[in-house]
Image (cartoon, rainbow, N blue to C red; front, side, top):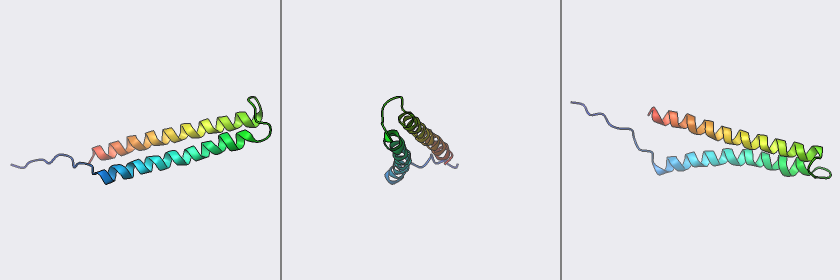
Length: 85
């Protein structure tokens, strides 16, 4: 009678590596969003309604949304990969 072994537990080092990957993704997109918001947004006379202010805010929002979507896709794909172990 063969016994099936359950899924192998994930050790702490692997969890920390996954967290570091997610943090790296968020830092990368957050850095780009900061450049958009505080770099592009402050060109010229930075006030609401000016072209560069609005463009900087739009780019920052786009980069933040892209970063969050990247993390979500990564977590879902990694969850599927781990469930098939």
